[in-house]
Image (cartoon, rainbow, N blue to C red; front, top):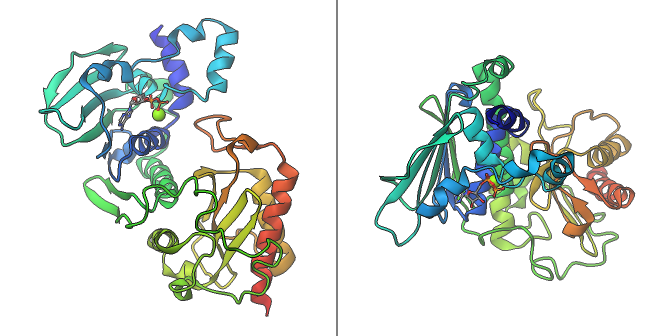
Length: 372
Ligand code: ADP
Ligand code: MG
């Protein structure tokens, strides 16, 4: 049984970065506005995510660590159902199966926090603890009980790089939340929250971008604008503090040069809304990938979207093999399946050809505006 748990857990928690992604998403789900990450040894030795969200009630602590699906993996049919549910309720249980986990949490209006520890399929009692309102999840010694698996982990610095990338993706998607990241006791990222509305996703219908002209030609007559000039006019389609906070977060993470050599992307047709920033060739950057695409607020890596973007760059600028961009596509949730696999960032569009066209033309318009 423990073995089955460990195998299943390895699917969900492939490396420290997958644990980090799950924990950050849990903190956001809990309404946190401040999230602090502490890593040691690339997150293999120790990974802590502390938030100021709603917390977990004492009696819920043991449940939070339990695999909802234990009974479900009895048959193939059940396995498929678990997969189709996107492994809901699997993350903490999976971590507890392959690492030592301590869960400390405090609700509002209780005298103190409570904590529970789990490792090797057993749970401790719930005991009193000190913690402000919110939750800390600590994961130690990933794969300590599955050495074969641990051997597949890369070096500390590589695992840290994956964690950092995961952190940046989530921080880009939520500029309204403060994030920090420490590695081996050193502060690596400290990102202040903007003062905008709690969650930009989903954008409320009719709000913010209600007054836009008809979709065709939205961007074609706009001059090229870098982030430095965006302060007053900025990304169209999302209004006021929201767009300002997104720019701030993008600048904080990608650096000011990115915005100085970039154009706005903005297009809306019916319920489809694409907005963000795409860098021009003048943006000289390191070799690392800076390609951030978010669908309904979730980071995705999708062939259809990537192809549309690359094709637009090729058509207009002829030579940019690894364009840098931060793009947000908001669309009706029923038109896209984002839960193909929790540990991967894949999506499946109902109308992938239409989405491709939409993204391609939006990028084409934005980039051709720079050609004079
Ligand atoms: P899921 O997120 O799919 O429900 P998880 O294993 O990630 O499954 O978490 C199990 C449960 O533990 C969550 O449903 C939630 O009730 C609780 N939980 C986990 N992390 C937090 C957190 N940071 N703050 C509040 N509750 C949490
Ligand atoms: Mg979760």
